[in-house]
Image (cartoon, rainbow, N blue to C red; front, side):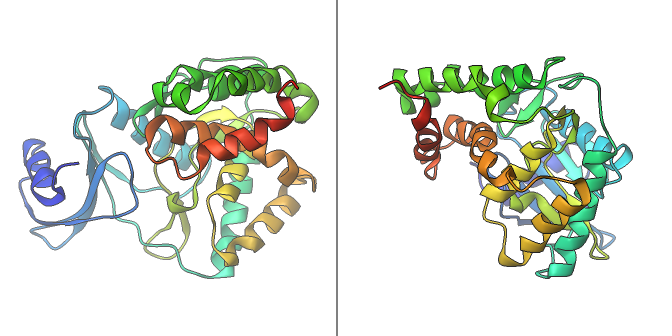
Length: 293
């Protein structure tokens, strides 16, 4: 990636934000260059840019997702200042506090999102992006078909996935997909964040839970829950999972199903990053019962 400060300054000025006086690099993102830009009036904005965007509409789709979470789901998100081809500028959030009270409040936020946005179909009206890879959101009537085709099998064509998984692995994934109705309960579609790892949980300036970096679609609520569960949430987040289950009536078996739902994010990580932080090993472990002996 290019050096953060001059790169972002150049993109900001090209977009007409000529009052930026300084940019400090931000950590946490993996796909784009990010920083906090201080303006001449003393205010700050969060900014990120691609060094070669994956599409013309990647940031527009992300901005739309933030708006959908806020307006349809009642979730706090950063305000969109500018969403262009090369640049996304947002209001500044703060790091989440390390308290159980915060995570308990977030359980209520996510439960309201998932229970209050039911939809008749699975998908979204456009594709959007997981990092630099397209998230396919073609509408489907059946949740099992949607998850199999657009969340799992879709990744088999990616070069790094082909290199990491052999023919037996790919065949096992296809068999797992065929058996999804036996392995997972039928659930309705609802609005999901779509990339809910722990780093995407932030706080508003007054300390309320807020979300960033969405890849929204109408999908199974448990895909959000499983994603958060597998990305090392802090110990104080334990109350979140307990309270979310109480609020939504989620059964106790959800953790045993989580590895299947987590396959999507593991495959996305393999497709984009080297090293893959053990994602291929986790995929193979989940697929082991579906290999023919």
